[in-house]
Image (tube, rainbow over all chains, first blue to last red; front, side, top):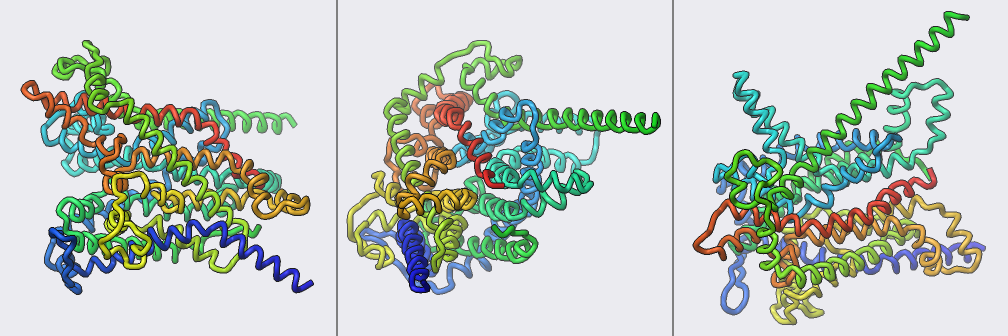
Length: 304
Length: 317
């Protein structure tokens, strides 16, 4: 009997490995080796010559240059990225949760609004976002405003608000605050699609019988939310938090990411670019670990 | 007694008012947010039909007075739209299909079988998601530039082998092995989905004599159809919009994303003497609309499954 049980476990083990085999092979070939290699590259100066690449060992040279000699890396790229993360991350997380809870209710036109809220996943990702961003910059450079500025999100609306505030003669800081907040709304709404989807999936898994039982016991909607919805959805909050951090930090319109790309592939300084990438990656990893360390204790897992 | 009834009806009234206000608030909020999402698209759409005179006419806001198809004609001519469209659909469809299949297999293995290293493999999937693409792109480029079986073990530093850059093979390899763009996310989503499907179904299948593969094929796959369609949509869309992978691994391919960011500029330059930077924006708008129309059509067709897959994932409760 015991023997038979072990073979079942062994069978399971083999089946599991077999199913995940493609990924394991791919991971080793296309992720692990490149990661190791880029780590090695970050300690070298790489230059292209007639017969291939020439690599010169630099030890910590690239890192030293980035952190202590080249002031613009930390000041203009790293810190703004982190600031962006600190502001957008809680906004996206809370906004998408709010929207998901509201979309989970039954009301007329729900399907329509769902379609609209997921639309940014389709139409403002990747290269489209990049182009929009570039066009916005060129438009601002050439001073084109009004109906002509096609790509600039809700910039028209921002202009109106700015005019209005200027008419009221309020302080400069208030104007910048309001306009940046309004501009941010567009960013947040368009980057919340996946998060809303994940939250909705989580909300749907909460059994209605839980709510029924607690309502019979006399709980209010508010109590239901904090005692049932929130703990049951907390694993999804964790997932969304991780996804949001990754998404913000790795986004195409992140200046640091663009700079890594430019340094490596346009200028051709691969070693320097890799070092930039590695510092960035270590910081993302640190942020994630810190976050997971704190948050995973608060997450409630239901044992199935 | 009467007072009680009065009190009750009052509380019902209060409830109605609260729910009415809540409803109004919801519609106003949603309409506003929908506007924020749709407004840039509407602006793009309108300016793609504008002629250059409409830009200098300050009375024109959304509806061009001298609507023209000129922008579209130029962009379609520059793109060679038919050819490029066909190739893009082929490439994205293929990579989407391969990624969906490979991610489904891996996710099923991770969701349903207990084996040593399972958590490690899941961790690896998450790792692929968080490493910045830019740091691994150069080694990947070198691997495919000088592709041979030993490349992997020399960490790509040997410079001999077949040049695969500019062919779809790198993308196929990455897709087959569930290592493409954002595949960690797909593995995660599918794993979650499989975990939520009832185990009883499989147990019944095992008792009826299915083995571990036939159970997967006949029992689990039909159940996961909607989620797989969602994943296919994601990978199709993200491949269609992908910039870095396409620019570096297949620079010369005749697909949209490799030229998309420079369309307006290139056409404006070919205008020669009558060059106008304002015109560039109109070309860009037309190019943008042409770029997203296939995506929007696909999205509208699949959104039914999309919503279903969300609802289905809650099947067990």
